[in-house]
Amino acid sequence: MITPTLDPYASRTDRDAGIVQRVEPVIHGGGSYADALNLGQQEAYTRDGFIVLEDLLPADEVDILLDEVDRMTRDPAIRQREEAITEKGSNAVRSIFRVHELSPIIQALAQDERLLNVARQILGSEAYIHQSRANLKPGFKGKDFYWHSDFETWHVEDGMPAMRALSCSVLLTDNSAVNGPLMLMPGSQNQFISCVGRTPEAHYKSSLKQQEYGVPDPVSLQLLAEKGGVVPVIARAGSVVFFDCNTMHGSSSNISPWPRANVFMVYNSVENRLGPPKYGLSPRPEHIAARVGGEPLAALPAGTFMQRVRA
Image 1 (cartoon, one colour):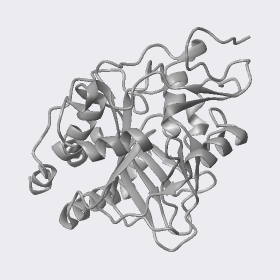
Image 2 (cartoon, one colour):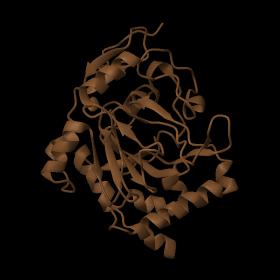
Image 3 (tube, helix red, strand yellow):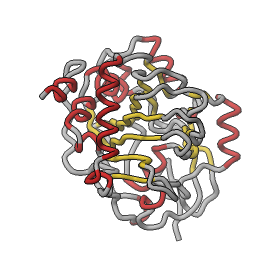
């Protein structure tokens, strides 16, 4: 039997679903650790749990990144790796994990000062990559990502102690209203949704295609949506979305002809390293939840990754 503990974010226990108030700040250290975001942007992130920095990367940089993701998607050696996740019922690539280690170009992107300094400012500390991946939604084939809080999964299945991590999504294609854009619930970062259902061992093998455990209940989702609404990220390629680890988000299937692609990095505070997973679960593989290394990332000048191409 699994019973609740003193953990303020206990989830997937024998108790019913519930909404728990967040205990940590959304921006740590008062936003003084770095100066990438101005005061208005910090206030927006604190209020909504996300911010969209439009046209942060110019078109030539986006082209290089998109070409790199396309190369990785077509590479037979990468497609055969455990890091490559295909859609349920097809061979279409859904995600490629650990792209910052598989690609020197994306490694340099993860350290780009335009991204890393935003993460450092919000986290109030140095940061490392907890997880990275390329997400793909080809036209007519890309499936949905159901509503979820990343922190719920990272807390239960990876042992992430606190809400001191964030996601950074670099848009490599235009996100329109019709090609399955990221959707977020403003203000949802302030409430933790405790989910029901005992987590099977090696849950990641199925959840990366379609998640069944750690899925919020409809009543909680409706309450969050009625309180804060639902905002789709409609933005051009080169824009970057930063959102809190507990912000409720998801996306619908892409039944349009136009593909959607992004590079996705999860920055975690060096003061928030992973502990043991909950309930005696085995740790997930390193490419999903980094435990080895985790040295603080050194910021690189903007666009350094372009030099990796020329090299």
